[in-house]
Image (cartoon, rainbow, N blue to C red; front, side, top):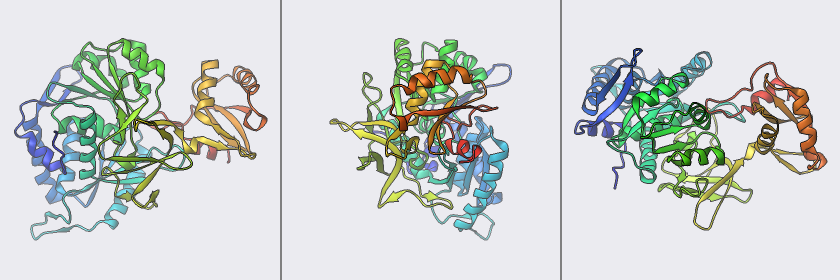
Amino acid sequence: MYTKYTSFKEIADDFLSRTGTAVIYADENDAVHEVSYPELADMIYAEVSHLRAVCSIAEVVRAERSLETIVSIMAHIIAGADIVLGDPMMPDEIAENAAIAAEEAKMERSIKRDSRGRISLVRKEGEMLFFTSGTTSRSKIVRLTSETMCASAWNGQSMLQCGEGDVILSILPLSHVFGFVCSMLWGIAYGAGIALGRGTAHLADDVRLFRPTILPAVPSQISVMMRSESFNPELKTILIGGAPCTPDMISFLREKGIDVYIGYGLTETASGIAITQDQDEPFALYPCPDSDISIEADGEVTVATSCMMEGYIGAIPMFDGDRFFTGDIGSVDEKGRLHLTGRKKDVLLMEDGSKIFCPEYEEDIAEKTGFDDLAIIKKDGHAVLIAGMDGNRAVLMNAVNEYNRDLQRSQQICDVMILEHRLPRTATGKVKRYELQEELGE
């Protein structure tokens, strides 16, 4: 049995009795540096003492993949401050949104200081505020407690183990829940070493330097590794999340001797809901121990879990009782395994009641043409194919005409539009359909 932590302080306290390496990073000269677990604990608690005296109720932390960021996040939460994790890759947007979120968090939370000016807690620890990916609507600000995050890490460890001797290569954004839990918190909670990646441009070098055994990643990152053949022999486990992956990608990795796990979760559930267990059926996802999954009459997946958010800031959660409506469509088989088929809002409802599942169209046309920067949206009541700046209208139009032959009239694509820029996407590669709708005046 694995310890089910209830706070970041419990995790940090355990660091003091460990002997392994906690964090590994490389400098500009490719020299590798290691920080032990006791050293990491000392850094965190030194920062906690400082923050309790000087920090405000809510702070914005730039979530870079660095030792300083890990220390800062852990210390702020233990000190009792709420933190907004800002994505360093989107400084303008996040700086504005994070500042607003921090102010709203201050208004929602009441913390007083004692006679010495230190934060006096009204509960165990601070909250973490994450932005949702915003594929079909504006991003929401999700409130997650450290207890919730710890429950998600425990869910992950119960289904897929890591520990001393493992090296987890951290290449995901820490400002997103999947990256924070699966490429950092899960590892340090259960004794693995966290190797801090330096970005996609350094991916091959980082694999060579750090020799990871576990890699949490999104499909686009795996594609980069496949093209450059950046797989070290020690890499035995890849955890894929954030966006759908293809059977061909899984087959390629399996041929390399790598076990592939697909994880399912949302920002609102601190990531951990379900994960692969049967390697011969990677898309059949078993619910994590604390996840109660149901399928509603319209096929929508709902979940009740100990990893659930406290709520949104300034928005109404999608709850019915204790069940959260995920917006995903799926089914549960006779073994209790979850099979996901798409997003509810990725389905276009046409005037005659017929439906179009956008990702299916996009994948089929991408396969026919070789252009993958594509999206289907609804314009003036009809389905329209939108392509990024590299698309060729003549080629795409020919493919669309051929594709339409097998479709009833209401489900056909009526036009192809080429933008002067790439399609807007989230950090995990999902198309932001709402931005396309706004840009095209829908």
